[in-house]
Length: 262
Image 1 (cartoon, rainbow, N blue to C red):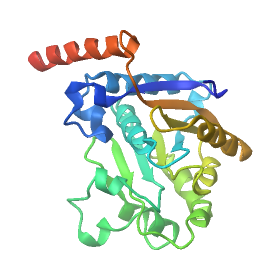
Image 2 (image 1 turned 135 degrees about the vertical axis):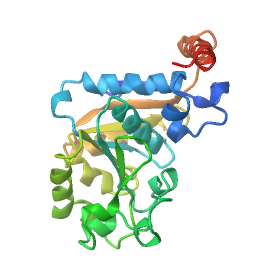
Image 3 (image 1 turned 180 degrees about the horizontal axis):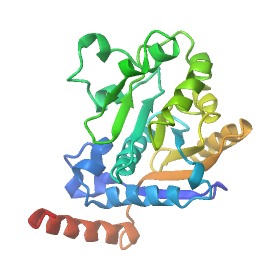
Image 4 (image 1 turned 90 degrees about the horizontal axis):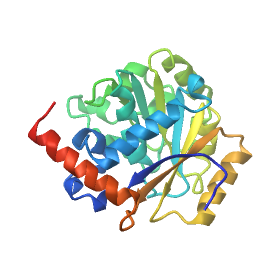
């Protein structure tokens, strides 16, 4: 099926790779760097860097049509492959209703009073940047958690403080990546799209319906979002097909690397 937007990458279904049984899919690039899934994320990074707008591509919105399509794992792994090239990236959880970065990157080292703070506090003017921007544990990657659920999420995301946050942090990071709420459930992602240099759409091969994908593209188009393209997540390996060969190759490669680490 064609959606009239570029295909930026295809991430194979991790369930079909026996080496990934015990791997956290949000950290697959770190925990299984030689897997076919990790290589697919590196290809995604390359495709983004080769896109026509690559020169001005600093603020990225990663979103999907519906919840559960896998956008957070794409956002986290994309941020991870960016910083692997000695870049600095800031990953922001803009999903106030269903935040997840605080569980993926626990703030174990921080005092309890700052562990609960996040983007909502910053946009309400309650805290400074230093109080909410924290280390992820991955070199070069910093995090802003969502923070407490505000009464007016959409208004906060479209506020002058959000504009100021992005302008300020452009000076400090090569990449700013937003993990946003789903496009078809709330208006938040469409509001964030106006701040982003480009939007990456995540479609799940096993979950996203064609109609939902088309509606997602249409709704983002209505707000003139710069859609860079889509990522197909959890693509199945057909017997004898490309991904089956890729899995075999990377499984062998991973065994070699484990036996003879670089």
